[in-house]
Length: 68
Image (cartoon, rainbow, N blue to C red; front, side):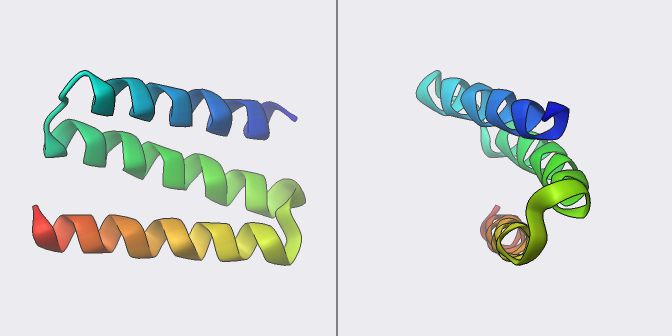
């Protein structure tokens, strides 16, 4: 449960930063942290759906890194 709570809190922080006009570097840092938290959650309880979510996050981060 702690992992899922951390993920939700991180998502809220990312949304707040985005609304506040944070730059790409700051958002990418938060996305990296989100990926670490999502990987931990997936290992703990995510199963196949969790693994897909982590893969999607990796893809989104890689795409943003290329565009940054």
